Structure formats: C-alpha cells, structure tokens
Length: 108
Image (tube, rainbow, N blue to C red; front, side):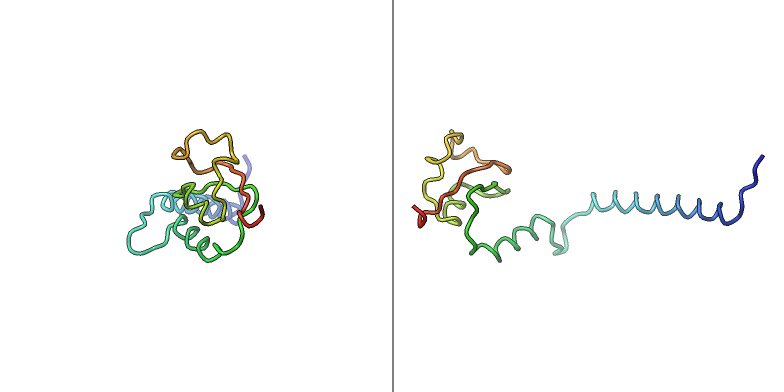
C-alpha cells in the first residue's frame, strides 16, 4: 500500500471543498429571486440598450425580448420592415431571436 503525504491529503480535501462550494454557488445563483430592487440581467441589458438607443441600427437586426415591429421601426427609423422581410408572415408573431433586415428611412 502506498502512503499519502499530509500535504497531498490536504490539497485533495481543499479541492473537493472548493468544488462543492462552487457547485453550491452555482445552484444558489440560479434560484435567486429579483425581489428587493436588484437588477436582473434582462433589466440591466435593457437599461444599457436605452443608453445607446440613439445609435443607428445595423442592417441585420436580431429581435430582443419585449420588442415589437412597431418599437423596432421607431428605434431604427424603418417604417417598411414587413415589406422588406418576406419571411415575416404575421407582424404580430415577432419573437426574440428573429433576424430582420433594417433599412433606415433616411438611407432610401
């Protein structure tokens, strides 16, 4: 049988406790509620986007959560989004992740 030195045993124990602590922190972060005025990541992203909403939209735009074609049209200055995107069959059926083409009205 081989003997394990005290420092090796201590290092192994510290490694296991660190792994358990990391797993516990991960589980707790998933279960965290947004009560108490803390910003959720979606609220933080939304507030950061509002700060930079004056910048022009890219030609290829990915719809984010809570956006409608009307809000995107106002934000990007493109009143003809439905006409330019034949893959949008129903203007009310817009979902996060949908990729659309934007052509600002001032560029026409």
